[in-house]
Image 1 (spheres, one colour):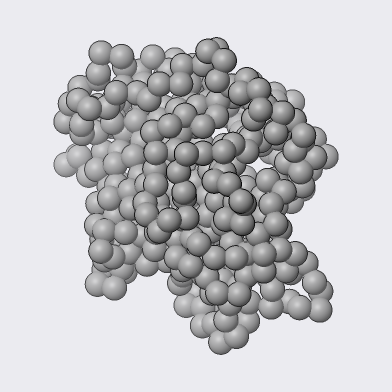
Image 2: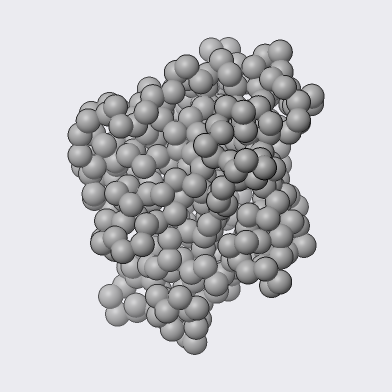
Length: 371
């Protein structure tokens, strides 16, 4: 989801479209079927094929009455199997010890591409997130009188945000604290099924995304096995003449060793119709499968498949004056934002995958801190 994705994906655009034409991912070498969760509930046991519920969240809190952090974590329901397997994560009464959701890291996301127009910089500010009516709403705006409640953001700029299951530890060097060293993983999981139902923003100069990331995907040497940025979707295709969506895998950091595999595919639904759509990932020890509204839209073994736990992110980003977004897409200049609305998130695990999880501490090497 880093801006390098736009550059890297532009470099492999011919490969991307060639794959789209040949449908190599749809040649029978992957199990593209959706798991059957019809009998999998919070109180059910493990299904015959190994699945159990980790958590589901319909965001029924109210940030106006209880505060943002409490509202984000007011309605997370964990499955009983997960509780039994992870007792240290819960209190004696079965409640989670601490919330798993927080807002994306406060501060500048992208510096302005025009030094003469610093107001075009994109900032993530928690004030742009609210919870109410059964939804998380991430607003976006260009403001000249922004009043940041945390006193971090400037008065003038482009402001948006997101939510994720990773917090940044306080007091760390701002230059490196968002690059792996200070990750406080509120929730992370390797393998399984991850699903988010959202309404994507419909405005120029912005895109939303559902993605997973590991603390050390910036390490060099083990390809993507020690961590891969998994972009379940990025909504940068509003200006396309046909309905399209992009998925991507990025590993070895964002510097000179970075590697990326992306896919742009035509899809049978209009994602900018003002309705909710469901984006999902089935992540097995052997491959990834991506879905939109229950339809498989890509599959890959890119990077060798991550085997480490990764945290969840649902975010919005704004152009920083260059009018470009990910996947080499021209998204226009941001002027007036549209809301990104999150209806629900669900995560499942499969018992058959658990033995393949590798602790990321087993991988040696330094982090590549290039942006």
